[in-house]
Length: 438
Ligand SMILES: O=C(O)C[C@H](NC(=O)Cc1c[nH]c2ccccc12)C(=O)O
Image 1 (cartoon, rainbow, N blue to C red):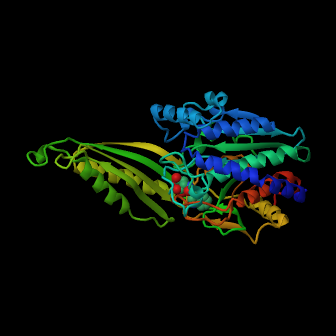
Image 2: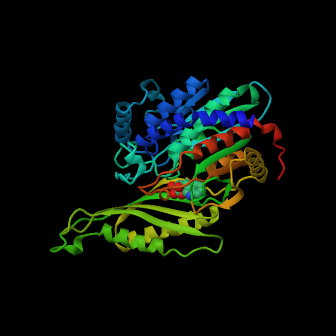
């Protein structure tokens, strides 16, 4: 069986590469994956999957970091101009770009969930001959949006897996659920899919990522200890005045934001684990001779445990409030994203290891590795499945990268997509070999 699958996947590679490069070119950030989702839905329907889309898999009120209605509408229109399939758009319109494809085999067995994320980053791709996507004509066509974390590869792995499993459906049992999630960057989308009940029936859950510093032909069966994180937009509102003539009448929002920035980065660490604070964006003021009446910051806290992150977050609230008080300005804080920490289950890690070994594709099979200080909102799905007694893990397929994740020169070796598809297919096809042993 393994050989048959491997041959099938190898035959698929040219189409997978074309698919990935199309998604890379029309990169779409979180909640704006309109073109991407219409193409994914159309492909999955043609393969024969039962689809649940949009508001059936995304709980509206649990979405975080949703763009404005105007931005949503602008990008829906652009998606249609760039080749989105119009008949699917009503499902996704308004920022509901999630998809769940289900294959019911009709034979007794578990529900296996596989999750891939689809969103790009808010980044401008380098348009230079030295950068392969530009050189070969598939660099991002969308200013300010780039696939710089491999999610175009993840989406393609999901579609390739869908094709392979549908072709091998007579050899499957139970139910297969393929989860295509929006808005992982900024940890904004998974919570809304969990709230919609997407993984409430899942017995065995597997999320995937490529790269992250794992070498090519290496697999991490269980990425461990993702950092819990909280993402905030902070706005300070003061009073503008003549900076030369009447500075005393002003209430300086820029100074409050600057004060908060230094205070946030000075938050003491916690003995319970590692932590991070970052002010990634600070915008303030309107003119050289005006006391700034408005300032905006994009902030994140992280902790190696939920408790450490909560401590840092509470300290952050005190710092922000204190800075506002110091400069007599108002402030408001908006939650823009969040993710928990989570660990894979030992039995599922062992099974993934066993199936990876049988494939004979990997130079090294690593059971667990500490997350490279990253966060992931797939942890919401993992924790939901584990809470119901299920198994969960987060698998990383190593690959050569042209630059680090979230860098404007990011690209990866596309052959890794085949390793991802083969491995996930093996998990589904050989589930009878899963013994639940730690
Ligand atoms: O917090 C976020 O916005 C999520 C984002 N997530 C990723 O980039 C995925 C990721 C980062 N590091 C690792 C390590 C292992 C798997 C996945 C990752 C991050 O950490 O900034």
